[in-house]
Image (cartoon, rainbow over all chains, first blue to last red; front, side, top):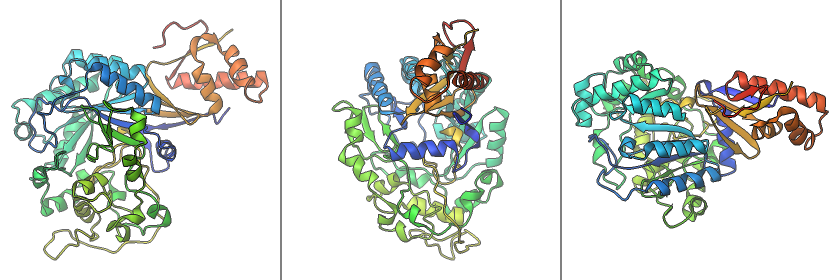
Amino acid sequence: MTDAVSITTAGGGTQTSLLGRIGAKAEARVIPISVHLDLTWRCNEGCVHCFLDHSVGGDMDTAEVKGALDQLAAAGAMFLTLSGGEIMLRKDIFEIVAHARSLLFDVRLKTNGVLIGDGEADRFAELGVREVHISIYSHLAEAHDAITRVPGSFALSIEAVKRLTSRGLAVEIRVPVMKGGANYARLRALAKEVGARILYDPTIIPMMDGDRTPVSLNLSPAERAEFYADPAVLIGLEDDCAPPAPAGEELLNGHSCGAGHLRCYISPQGDVTPCVQFPLVCGSLRRGSFLEIWKSPQFAEVRGIRNRDLQVCSSCSSLSSCRRCPGLAFQEGNMHGASSQDCESTYFRTKVPTPLYPATDLDPAPERHPPVSGQFVPLAALLPAPRDGMHRDPAAY
Amino acid sequence: MSMYIAKSRSIAARALDGEMIIMSTSDSMLFTLNEVATEIWLAADGRTPLSQIVQDKVCAKFEAEPEAAYADAEDLCRRLADYGILVISDQPIESAR
């Protein structure tokens, strides 16, 4: 029985890793192996770039959430992200996490950490939460607090990171990067100091209701060029920044993201969509079962979109490198089309002009070069797709 | 001496088309078990001796010599225990940690 078990460290994966194979298998069998469940959109911070309307209520109650988890487990979901809003505003958060763990979900939490004291950290450790993501916007308290609009929030969030890592939980500091940029090296040093991983995310997305105001907070072209030139950002991103390989048949017959194929999103009100940033409501758990929704015509349409059918992207020379987000394209009006934000990011990442970002002499991205030849290896699309600039760390999945 | 096996509490797990996927929540190591190992894993209730599990879940379902199957199963269980995702004991296990 020497081949009875295959083992990999979740932090050491590559495209051919066990994780990728699991993702491919789930996708082939249309199993929603990864689910992002927002427990509330209420929040105790007021981040300037947030894509949620915190005034929307009607959250599922404890029994509804537990029922949803039961259905998800039965459907084959394993990787569960509990997020918000701020999950710690739910008085039943530990009851929900305990139920998820009793169903043997791999649980990851997204929180600002402000309400995580020693007792809360102890409880999450006891329950077997594997990973916690906490957003930090700067290594400077005043800069962080200016974004959250809560004085003292930086100190509380950092303390939460320390409390969690000291109890053996994996913590990832998420850095939404926006206008003005950040000191990426100092942030990386801060993460190391508190025992956390770090992930930069330079894509500020529109609000779920379509309001594109937050998009104006994105990095300027010059700042984006600086971002992709910063050594503290580029660690682990070497392959992502390489010139794109030509698109082969496998890529053209594939799709750009696992949203709707092997993962989905559930809102606090029970609406099911392909992804948190792909607000195509395919059904509600308050009016139907999860599997009915997962098998709905809306999800089928999302799954039916192949790269070769994309109206702009199919002929793009950067197709193999682009992290086209169908949700961002959807929010720009056409989920069969391109996402201008991804076109821009791909250009600055690879230095190769893209259809919606053809570049001009005024653009600061230097050293454009043509695509190189080579065999395309499809990325393993398993869990929340990294946006541009986010390196895929399988442990985050 | 009998061996008893129980799943660790520090795991996440799901069956995916006959293959068991296991994530260690303590160190983020990921495992998959093949069909035979999955049968043993599923039967790891802390109360049933491994010899009984091998007889009922391995020899009865797969072509296997009992002695060789038990030796392989024991080796598998010790390896999984080394990784902290399975608990083994020479006594029935009340509550796996």
